[in-house]
Length: 116
Image (cartoon, rainbow, N blue to C red; front, side):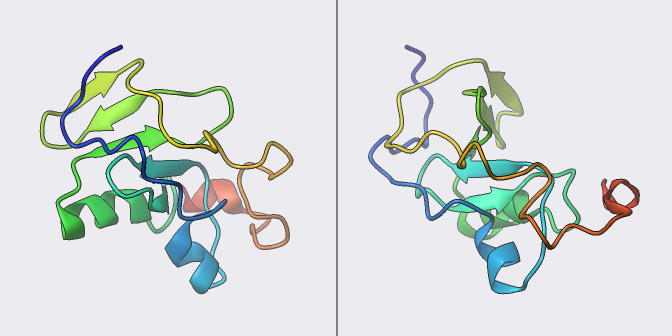
């Protein structure tokens, strides 16, 4: 197991989708989980980039993918990618039936043109 500074393995995810996008009826491409507090935010390719914004506003340094089949971590301050890290509180990813991009019904038909 790789030890990564700024990870609280006991912090549960805040939900199944991007917290801010859900509250604003927005949409996301991929999801990221704050490894310190469990906040779920959208990735940097998403229109709103809430995961990076959360890290900048809170100082929480590490995210983990919240996509099925992915368990990598990213440290913002170190600009370091980790293929694996400590086991986090479940669930490990959004529900498999949740579409990518998501959520269902809110993704525009021209969604590719909105990616970063």
